[in-house]
Length: 425
Ligand code: AMP
Ligand code: GLY
Image (tube, rainbow, N blue to C red; front, top):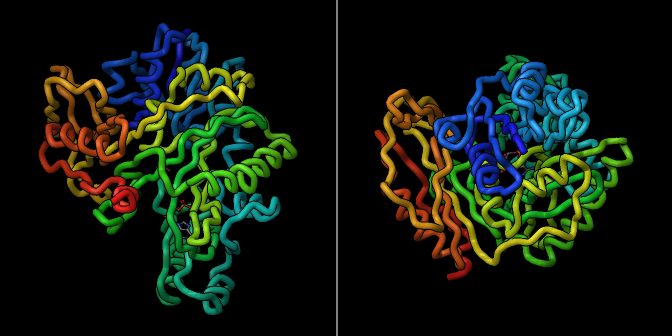
């Protein structure tokens, strides 16, 4: 089978690695790809915001399966266009992709279907939003409605801060079209976890719960990033929480999608906050694998992830069939100095000559030059992944390799999984 993977990040490199290991796959095309994917796949240029260009490429390479990695092509209807052209596609159509592309749509969806979430109100009018903000408890959360690369969510401690954010979004257009409508939301104080489902219609498999580390600094401080590291399984989602997630969140969500006529095929990422009383509430939906969560979840599957992806794409998923290894997986993201603000590109990366069997390196912002060297080309440059029987062991194995990957001004967090490791004592 020929598989076309759309995207260029760590998530997509891990999908390419899964394809490389799969007995189902003979040829992998990645578009546009990155330096790591260039070693494992045939990389082709493509504008991921251009559905027609993606369809043209799928036709040119005669893909048997197209895996759409990031949200941007999903939000412009790439899956719809590919399906209309007869391809098997992993990734929802536009109607499903709205769950990530519009926070106000999702808030209405959650509230209308009585799915636990923070209360929220939407505004397009600045004066009305300020009136509202003068009568709420703080902290409060303000979100730009549209896609804003993880930067459109602000937690405001005071009315003055909140007013400034509302002004930025609704008047100054700081987030462009994404911020023309805002959602003002109750602040939830709890522990976050990511739940990744592979979905075909009302059938799904739930991958192990994971915990991402979105802040740039140790102890979860500093600016928000795309994600600096993650581990799975995350114990915060214990049996009781998982039961509530399945019954109170997943079942009504998939039922409501079906009732709305949406044939969802792809990943549904449910970001949850587990409150101190054990109640999980939805923070956000994403309509693709998490990055860096994907990089640790695929290696935890006992079976071939590509088979599951293909089954979802064809609407043939057998939900009882997922098998997960009795192991832990951890990824530490290595970033370019300065990220998530301005950073330098083009630095040569040096890698250890050999890797232990349980460790791999997944590329994100890298390019391969003509001399075959790998250079930095993004903020999140790469991730080191280790699988081990205990979380502590995974951590030790991952950091041993992290210390051997080098380029000028590289940095990483040293405390991935700190909450769970502290609890384990
Ligand atoms: P989102 O893009 O909606 O997931 O928001 C980004 C991040 O902001 C989340 O991962 C949370 O850490 C935080 N966040 C979003 N909404 C809330 C909320 N209602 N209460 C507390 N934190 C939140
Ligand atoms: N790791 C967070 C995300 O992919 O949205």
